[in-house]
Amino acid sequence: MKLGDIEIKLGAALAPMAGVTDLTMRILCAQYGAVYTVSEMVSAKALVMGDKKSQKLMAGGGGNAPYGIQLFGGEPTAMGGAANSITSGEYRGVTCDFLDINYGCPAPKITGNGAGSALLKDLPLLSETAEAVVKNSNGTPVTAKMRIGWDEEIMTGVEAAKRLEAAGIQMLTVHGRTRKEMYIPGIHADEIAKIKAAVSIPVLANGDVTSAQTALNLLKETGCDGVAIGRAAMGNSWLFAEISAALNGEPAPEPPTLKQRFATMRKQIYDMCEDKGERIAMQQARSYATWYMHGLRGAAALRRECCSLTYFTDVDKLISAAWRVQEMQNKEERR
Image 1 (cartoon, rainbow, N blue to C red):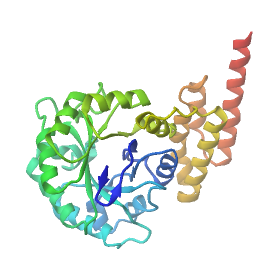
Image 2: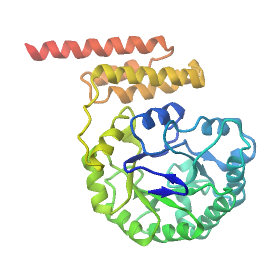
Image 3: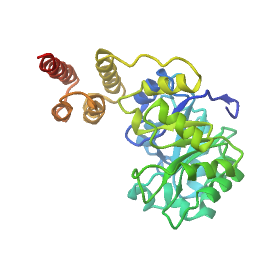
């Protein structure tokens, strides 16, 4: 699959997630086979006003995979200005292989300002924002992430996709829920299939992919060109390798051992401290660490331990506690 001059491998991409797809997460997922990674969403308006935090969100790239920077906003002038600033090299340490536009975020603080999935209710403005980014991207490919509609009454996904293709968007990622549905119930694969059939550009399916088999099933149901993984990748970067193997007809990789799982968590949090400083990183690491406890015996108690992480040395204490719980459970099972 081609995106401009970039070759995108067959597999799973890392979907952008606010507060999650930071530099360390992107590097980690790329290491395990994400076919591309995307930044946390960046406010176009904040960026053109010189916000330093927004600039930091974009920096560092995406590891050894193609990297996209995701913009959100409902003002075409700001969107175009942000696109030009990024792709003209205005920000030190910020480069990308493509830009991505957010038409899918359901958060009230985003939609309340007319951005994210709110633009699915205003298709002329959706077209204007896409055209502004494409026009000012200095030749950098532009993609978009969207939902299938606002609610059951405003199912604009197909028309939105056609407009985005006409505006010059080169690839779409479609989350198979409406904005009203947020993240439940299950996705509507049939609606993703309708969008795929309506355009000639590549389309990736997003939502409810938690294993290699669910990825294969979703591709069969939708006819899409690949999948994008969001929440299922948290604490489970090995999922990209599993999906890649399945899609390419290769043997499934061995699942990570508990030792590998804890070592990966420790390195991710260490790299976060290096990137952001210990104080900020450890606050965020509380939720990151809970991802890695998922599915372990005694996970509820371990998650409480995660909430008290303050210094990096606390990570080793957490790992020791987790080992003790697993060993105790093993002894109980052997009796």
